[in-house]
Image (cartoon, rainbow, N blue to C red; front, side):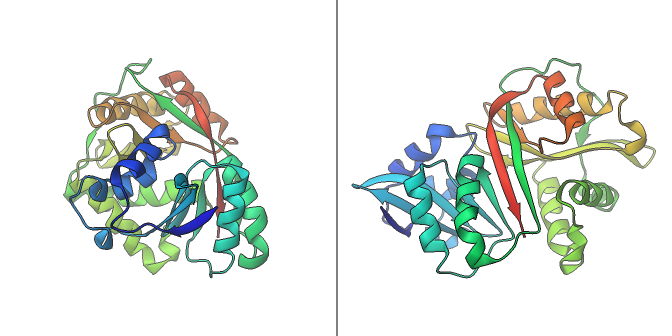
Length: 279
C-alpha cells in the first residue's frame, strides 16, 4: 500500500472513474477537484492537498486535506496506511468528515498523535433524493440577493452554532464564514423565505457536481418549527438543486430526530452513513 500526493501527471480519467463510483459520498472531493479533472485549472491552483493510496498500480482511496480532512470510502488496510502517514504530520484540519466506517478507525489510530477531539458525531445519515419532493414546496423560497447578506448572516450563524456546537464568529470574527456565505449568494446557491425582513427559512446548496448536489445550512426560525415551514422549504431547495445536478443529498446528525422526520417526509432515503470528528 503506497500513499503519495496527487500530481499533475496523474491520470484524470482514472481519478474521475474512482471518485464517481460513489458520486454522492465523494461529492465534496469531486467538487474540489472538478476544475482540474475538466482541465480548467492546473493542480497547483486547486485549493487543498490531495493524497492517493495505491496498491498494485490501482487507486484504493483519495484523501483531501484542507480545512476538513475528507477520505473516500476504503478498506481497513487503506485506513492503516493513511493513519500511519498522517500520524507523522501535525494536524492541519479542523475536522475529519467522511464514511463512518473509515473515520472511526482512522481516528482510533490518530488520536494519540493529534490529541483529543472537541466532539465526535458518531453517526450522520447521508440521505438522497433523485426526483420531485413528496410535499408541496414553499413558493416563497427564493434566491437570496447579495444586498441581503447581513439579513441572512445571523440565521446562518445560529444554524452553524446549533449544529456544530461553536459559533463561526469565534474564529476571525466570522469573516471567513461570512465570505463563504456571500460567495454562495453570488453563485445563486443560497435560498430563503423572507417576510417583512424576517428570515423564516434558509438553506444553501453547498456542493454541486454533475452527479450530486448537497444541501447544507438548513434552518427554520424557532417560532415556525413544527408548522411545516421546514419541510416545504426543503422541498423548494430540492427543486432548485435538481436544476443543478442529477441527485440531491444532505447529511444530518442521527440525534436530530426532528430534522430526520422532515427529510423523510420530503422524500429523502438513506444512502450511507458519515461521521465527523471535530477539533
